[in-house]
Each structure stands twice: as structure tokens, then as C-alpha cells.
Image 1 (tube, rainbow, N blue to C red):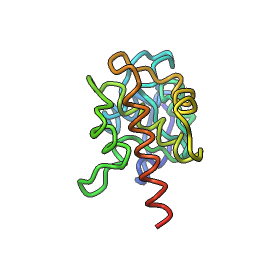
Image 2 (spheres, helix red, strand yellow):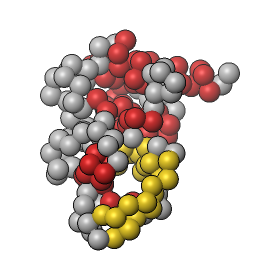
Image 3 (cartoon, rainbow, N blue to C red):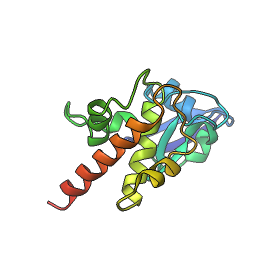
Image 4 (cartoon, rainbow, N blue to C red):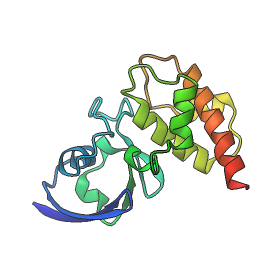
Length: 159
């Protein structure tokens, strides 16, 4: 067992972990943050996408011990005081989810896209989402949701 210290959703955590434990299982099983889904365990689907030091990563490709000293953000950190984050609200308003299994990972990947890119067109959003798979929606409404949230987040930031 190894001790790890990391900040998850602005809360510092110290825990003992098996050296081979994946970060996704640490988040789900030890911290109870089940919004990060396990899809494939092979980094193919993106259901486990989180932000690690502000960058989207698939948490099934990171060992918990590799996250030592990092800042992790999961889907649970986005809604504040009962209000949905603009991305969550946009996914709801544009019907960008059906079964919802990919949605947390898709939203976290989209948050990284919006944060690190200016005025993305549809093709740039689709390219940026490569590696985050949805079996239900066909991506059209997901792209619309990201465009809507991006616009809202940028206009809010300039106020």
C-alpha cells in the first residue's frame, strides 16, 4: 500500500492505495464520487474523463499513485448551490443526452475544450471530443450544447 495526497473537487484527501489501483476506482470506491463512470477500462470510451490539473484525462489511464499532489476535478464539482453548470444546463436544454452514461465524461472533456479554445466551430468541437464515445445521440445535440455553453460561459466571463 502507498499513501497518496491529492485535492479532489477542492478538498484535500490522503489515502492508502494499492500501487496498481486506477484513479477512476479510487474516485468511485474510496471517495464515493460515482459520477465518474467506468466504461471500458481501456481508454477507448471516455466515460471516465476528469480534469487533472485542469486538463481532461481518462482516469482509467492514470494510477491513483500518479495523481499524487495533483488537483482533480470531477463532474460532482460543477453544479454549485443547486444550480447546474452552464454545460450541464446546455446538455439538458438541447437534449444532448439519452442514456446519460457518457455525459459526465463528455461534459468534462467539453469543459477542457471550452476553457482552452476560443470560438470553436462544429468540426473543432467534434475533433476535440474524439475519444469520448456516445452510443445514443449521434453527437449533433452534444455539439449544440457545447456551442451554447461556450457562448454563455464567454459572455459571463466578459461581464
